[in-house]
Length: 116
Length: 115
Image: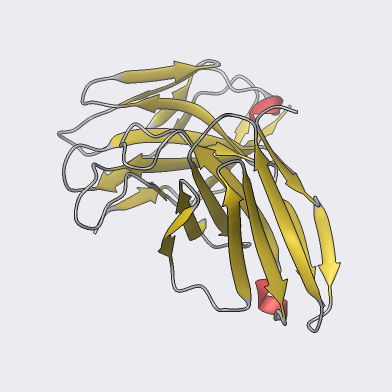
């Protein structure tokens, strides 16, 4: 079945460090890929998405490129800030099919802690 | 109000109580979802509604009873819960269900504690 695997956290970085959070997926068909972020005490917010191979999603300095050959969608940011401390979720949405409805399948989440 | 709202934000209940969680979306979407988020567990999809009709129930215990009176409102009725049901309950909506580019919009969640 479809699944998403994220690197385990927590990831602890100093301010202005480079961030990479790995995400790989297993899916039939041609999924769309998403990164959501959850700040403390809040719900999830869409950070960026990519709907086809080689697409790059970007927002607020974060980027992720849809790599079909490696089935990956790694999240990167060149210089993190304390305000980026949150939980990051990778997710996929596959084509409708016999068992898919286009709903999202989430990874387990990766906690990022950025220290001043 | 804009986006997806949830009330209450916090709820403490005993195991014999009956309570309801409310979700409202102001986005004109047709699909709505309930998720459970527990500590150290991935997001668990509980129920999916499309145009007010339930399309998915992921083996959720009957002590959780969803209701979707229209495309803008979604309820989760709770009764005789267990302490392990304590979690953050998230509501989400999306424009439509059968679309792989579906982006879901989430509410802030209800933090539920069962004593």
